[in-house]
Amino acid sequence: MEDIAFTLPAQAFLEGTRDHAGWESHAALPVIDHNRGFIGVLYHSALMHAIKAHRAEGPDRRLDDTLAVLGGMYWLSFSAILRALVSTLPDDRDNRSGKDVSP
Image (cartoon, rainbow, N blue to C red):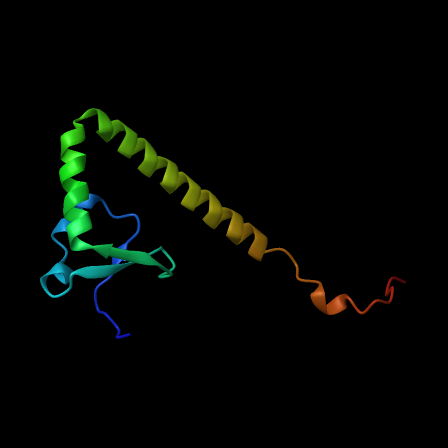
């Protein structure tokens, strides 16, 4: 495997990824999540097929896409807030020696 300078964010819109600079030199690009974790690979031919199918679906599909994006943004925000709250909790793993240390 070789390092690749180009990646696609998982939350990217189809039309936005069509003009990605990585397609000039690669037939497939890695897809990553917001933590830069590898999700999979997207082939340029599959992307073009999806864009063509998306255009054929018509304008009714836009509302579904918008709601899906809003739902995804809500979930990412909620999980980030929850992660931040959990990180503020005290860590008592060091005090678990099996003995009761209460006075």
